[in-house]
Amino acid sequence: MQLAARFLARRDRTVAQVEQFLRSKGALPGQIRHTLRRLSDLRCLNDHAYAQRWVEQRLLSRPMGQVRIKAELQAKGVAETVADRVIADAFREVGEEQMARRALDAKQHQGRRLTPAQSVRFLRQRGFDDETIDGIVMVARGSDEGLDS
Image (cartoon, rainbow, N blue to C red; front, side, top):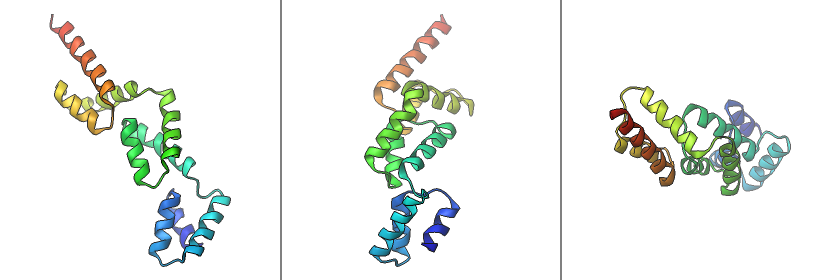
């Protein structure tokens, strides 16, 4: 329990991260189960709350699409159902297209203007779906043509 408490004191962790840490320190399976149950009962360990905080912070600092966020959450050990629920809640307020525009605007404020091909590549890397990307790139092309006329 003391190992897990010190591990959690540094920053938020998922159940899977704490379990893996305890296993790497040689804890027995029964000890691990007991510790995880106790930490959950004390509300020190909650994957849903962890995922909510992580997604909120991630979207503020580095806007990305639902696919990428889900992959990152699952890599941290968050269950698919929990990740899906948290992501749906996060994108209910801010749609995928609006998030993609924010990501693209932030990228273009870092320097030069991106070509349509560079925009597509960037948005794909950030985990946005093809439909969202196509819509944004088509609107950008239309506004560029209007400016050139």
